[in-house]
Each structure stands twice: as structure tokens, then as C-alpha cells.
Amino acid sequence: MNGKLVGWDEAKVHILNHGLHYGSSVFEGIRCYETADGPAVFRLKDHIKRFFNGAKVIMMKIPFTEEEVCEAVKETVRANKLKECYIRPIAYYGYGKMGLNPLGNPVDVAIACWPWGTYLGEEGLRKGVRCKVSSWRRIDPRMLPPLAKVSANYLNSILAKLEALDCGYDEAILLNFQGMIAEGPGENIFIVKDGTLITPPPTSGALIGITRDSIITIAKDIGISTVEKDILREHLFCADEAFFTGTAAEVTPIREVDGRVIGDGSRGPITEKLQSQFFRVVRGENKSYLKWLDFV
Ligand code: PPE
Image 1 (cartoon, helix red, strand yellow):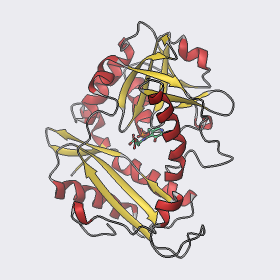
Image 2 (cartoon, helix red, strand yellow):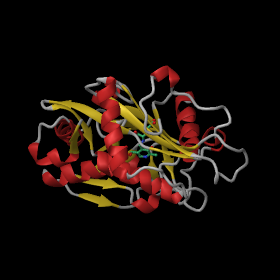
Image 3 (cartoon, helix red, strand yellow):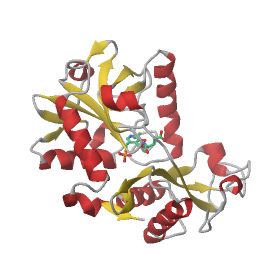
Image 4 (tube, protein in one colour):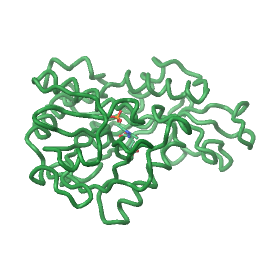
């Protein structure tokens, strides 16, 4: 916290923390994987770049450099002696004064890490998850900045997630104001049609995920091309395969949407290929992608 290692139970904030009341914070989600050469953080610099960009969007000045935050991430993982973990850097307007204007409050920065297994379950990763198109629309850029990983944005995701769970599904899918598929509450989405990947463009309102970019790159290298274009709900229903990507969700197949079975209702062959390549890449088993790994 703010440059010092603090014990888990001492990592506390005051109840009048600005970020707690108004969601005035920005965060990242990063994974560290075990490799033959020790733990390695996946695409650390890209995550920290997005962290700083998010802060810029909400006019927050992080009192550290990107290099310092990258170093602190690795130090936190080392201190916790974790081989594999999830890492959560967060910058928030802290304790000072109340009222909407955050200026004048300190900008506090913390990094936490802990072991976090599969996001949507082991079975979800192997067989796929059942999804509901949400009645909540993905936040529109006219209201909140969807491309920034700002905490306040996440109530939209939480509402969609709660609704999906309440209706007996595993996960939600959000449409944007134009009725096009945007993303999951914490995941990007891809469909497979006739051997090609299709994913919504940045203008869909989806967060531009680092896993999304990794999958587009890995797919290209094994001869599968990706098109960024608007996806209608019925394109999703009639896709050959569909899957989510995200740091937490990794590559999770989608097997059903609103009662429609996707493809043959299990993890499709292209999804399986990309998923297994992805796990080889993050664990340092594909040497061409070592540039994405930061050894702790
Ligand atoms: N969309 C949203 C809205 C999102 O939050 C994430 C990450 C993604 C797409 C995928 O982005 P990337 O991780 O760069 O591939 N969601 C993070 C938080 C999940 C949570 O439940 O907390 C994550 O996956 O770490």
C-alpha cells in the first residue's frame, strides 16, 4: 500500500474513503502463472499501461511511475511466495474530505495478490457455460467511460451478473445501446463462424481486453483470422462456437445462450485449440511468446 509491504490483516482503509463511497477508483486484474523458470506475470506492462490510461480518463494522478508499479507488482508476488496468483492493483481517491469533488484527497495505490482458480468453474472451462443476455445494457460512452477499468463502471456488470445467476445461468452477456453484443460482465466475447473468429469492435463499448488481444494474436499465428464487427444476438445463437476471454475467465467456452444450444453444446474444436495454446503461452511453453512474460 502506497509503496510499503503491509500484512494482509493490516491492509485497511478508513470508512470515509472516497473510492468506497463513489467508486472513484481504477483497477487492474492480472495473472501470474507458474512456468519452468519460476512464476511469471502475464503481459504486466500492458496491464499497467491500461491502469494509467484509466486513471488519466478520470483525471487521477497516480503518484508512481509505470515502472515503479510494475516492480511493485513483482515484489508483492515475491513477498507472498505464490507460484500462481491473481493480482489486483488499485488506485483510489482515499480519505480526506467527503463530497463528489475528489481533488484534494490523496490518491492511494495498493496491490493485492491471492490464489484464484478458475473464474467460472473447472467444468465451465472444460465444457462451457450457460449464459443469459442481460436486460441491463452495457454502459454507454455517453455516460461512463467503458474503455477504462474504473470501479464505478462495475455496478453495471454486477447487476447483469446477479440477474443471470438469479435466473439460473452461469454468466451474463450485455448488449450495447444499439442492441449489438458488447461483452460479458468481466469478459470479452468471441464467436466462431465458418472457421473465422468474430468479436465486437472497441466501439461496441466492451473493455479492450488484453486476453482478447492475446487470443487474436495466437489465432493469427495458427492461421485463424479475426474480424472485429458488430454481432447481433441471433449471430450468437447461430454461431458454430462461442467463448469468453479475460484475465480471470482465461478462455471459457459458451455452450448455451438464452436456451439456445451453441454449436454442439460443448467446447468447440477451435475454442479448444485456442484455449490449449493460450495455456501453453501463459506457462512459458511456447518460446515465441516469452516477450509477454515478466518473471518475478
Ligand atoms: N471486459 C470487462 C468488463 C472486464 O472487466 C474484463 C476483465 C475484460 C473484459 C477482459 O479484459 P482482460 O482481463 O484484459 O482480458 N475483468 C477482470 C475483473 C474480473 C472480476 O470479476 O473482478 C479480470 O478478468 O481480471
